[in-house]
Amino acid sequence: FGSSRATSAAPLTPFQQAPKAMRQWCFAAAAALACLVLGVEGKAAFYVSKDTAPSSFDLSKIGSQAEGEKDTLEYKLFITYDGKKISPWHEVPYSAGERNGEKLLHFVCEIPKGTTAKFEVNKENEFNPIIQDTKKGKLRYYKYNPEVGSLVNYGAIAQTWEHPEEKHPDTGVGGDNDPIDVLQLNDRPCRTGEVMAVRVLGVFALVDDGETDWKVLVVRDDDPATAHMKDVGDVPAAKKSELIEWFRRYKTAEGKGLNSFGLDEKVMDKAYAHKVCMETYEHWWKLRHGGLVDLHVPATEYDQELARAQKLPKLPISPEELNWVQVLAEGWASPLDGFMNEQQMLQSLHYEHLIVDGKWVPMPVPITLSCKAEDAKQFEGAEAIALTKPGSNDEVVAILEKPVVYEHRKEERCGRTFGITHKGHPYCGMIMESGDFLVGGRIKVMKRVVHGDGMDQY
Image (cartoon, rainbow, N blue to C red; front, side, top):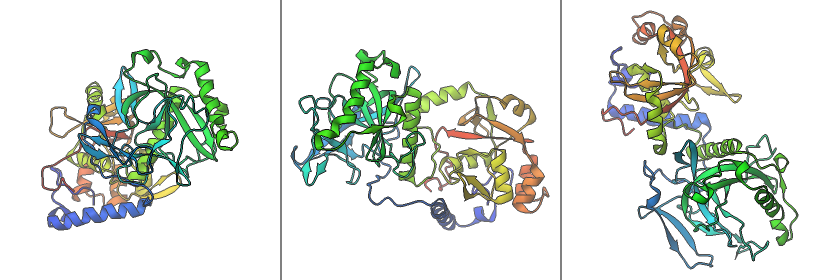
């Protein structure tokens, strides 16, 4: 039905004239149908929290709350934000912003350097507290070189998950079903439950019991002693060898064999490590949200992206296209993550589906962005463009990355979608009067689109 909102270019549709309660029901039904179409699976084995984290994350408000006695099976360490329990797995953001052009991530400390108790973020309990791992009802400790303990501050990156059923092409096996592991190389031991911004240096692939178990090398962003460390080449070769050997042998103290590694035991560079981290973030996102996309810019990146947008070529969008920005941003058109390119538009027109990773996803209405000929020439080859709000003074709504410009096949679009090409049809009239070119590309939406019409909560 196109958009649920009225626009200046078309009269109210029957859907828009319907009572608000009926429209609310339609939205809910559409969301439920989207879940069925996309194959959303329940993950009852994991605790997946509600969205209670603040929109702007402040590390100074992080605390902890212990329950039960330490060194007992009842001990749990909860992470708090402003005094309230949160999940360190789901509600501490993945991104910690940027500093000096470096992308930072949030690290959750589980095992401080020099200690042996095997603490970890628990995936099953409410709020995912940090608890000590057990085996046959007994608390687990590192048995390998216990006089030294952990060589590093050990923990995880928030909002990541190593998918056990997704075989990584560079290791040939799936993930270990946990948040991605982190080796923080700073000298000062961290505290269990401490959360900090870290700089990624590299990664290696431990293959443990037939599972990929990535180990990401990081340093604190605020430690002057490691300020010079920017990439894996800045980590001493002896340190990298020491870590590889430790993880190769640490299970031998439990009577098990040597561990093996992927990637020929190489410690890969920062760029590769960030790619791996992002893959595990995307797996976490699908675990938590069922595959629905969210294209809103994280609060930690808002200022930087807004400053970037001000320098980009700008394209004013129509009220109808603003509605599509909202549909895309909130995941209603998942897995579509931006305005359609030509191939996607033609798939939608002719098959009423998109073909994504070999699967057919229903998508009967093209979601497109139009522009005039003079804009098309300006946008071709651009790194990105800024989409501005209708009737505003260049208020940026979204950034469209790597724009692809192609011909707007107006009659074909109208005929295939509505079975008519006459301008008297309100939507066909709007299409015919729009630009002669279309622009496709992934979008980042600056903030949630609101209309103040009583429907924003839905």
